[in-house]
Length: 334
Image 1 (cartoon, rainbow, N blue to C red):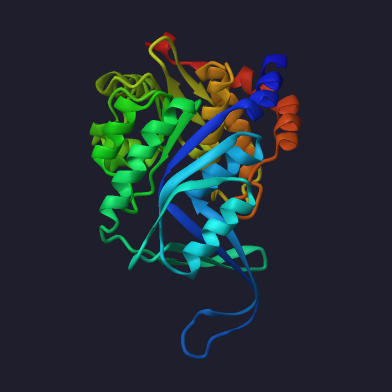
Image 2 (cartoon, helix red, strand yellow):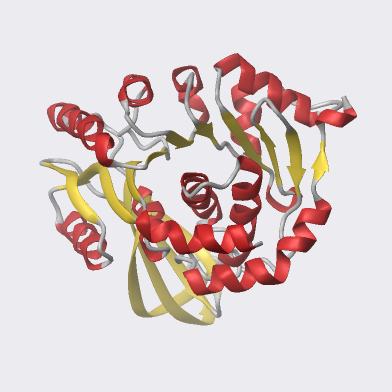
C-alpha cells in the first residue's frame, strides 16, 4: 500500500494534456411544490444555478485537483457559455492555450434540473456541425509539439464532433507521450497501437458487434486487445467492476460497493486515475484498483465533482486490501 500512497503524492510532478469535447455543465437547483396543470410534469421553481466544467474539461479538472499540471485542447463557441467555460478552467489552474474559439459555433451545454437532491431532467444544447477545421488542424499540431514535454495524453471522446479518426491516428502515431483513450465506439479502428483504451461495457459491446457475451468475458477482452494491438485494455461494467488485460494477465477487479448517488463523472475519474497511476510508476493492475476506488468516491457526489487527494488517500487505506482480495484472474480460467 505504501507504493500506492507514494504514487498519489507524486501526481503533483506529472504534466498531462487532455484532448476532447469541451462542455459547460449547468446545475439548476430548485423546489417542486406542485404538478403542472398543462401536463403531468412537476413544476420546478429554480432558486440558483451552478456552473461547472464538463466533458473533457472535467477530466482536466480531476487531474488538476489531484495535483497534476494540465493543458486542455478542444473547441468552444464564440459565445457567453464558451467564455464562461474558459474562465472556469482557468480558475482551476487548467491551461487553455490550446482551446480554440470558433465563430458561429455554439458551446455544448448540459443543463441538469435538480430538486430534492434528485435530477429530474437534463437539457442539452449541442452544435454537431463541422466548423473550425483550420483551428482543429492547428490544435492537433500543437498537441503533438507539446506532447514532447508531457507525461501523458488523454483523449476524451463524447462523440460531439471534435475528434475524428485522423486525429486519433495522428496523436497515437506522433505523440511523444503515452496515449490514454476514453472512447466512443465509432473510431475503434483508429485506436490501433494506443497505450491504453478504456471503453465501458456498452461501448465495448457495440465495438465488437457481439450482442451477448458467452463463456469467459476476459477472453473477449484479450481478443479485442490483440486485434487492435492495444497495450492495455480496461472495460468498465458499472457495479460489476472492471476487466483489465495487458497481454500478461487478464483480471476482473470488483467495484467498491457504495450507495450510488450519481454516476455522473465516474468514467472521467477512472481514466484520470489510470493515467496518473501508471505514469507515477504503478502497474495496470495497481492503477486499476486505484481508479476503482476513485470511481467509488465519485458516485457518492452530486454531479461531476473532483475527488481530492485527501479523499483518495483515506479510501485507499480503508479499502485497498479488501479490493485486492476480490480480484479474480481470468487467464487461469482459460
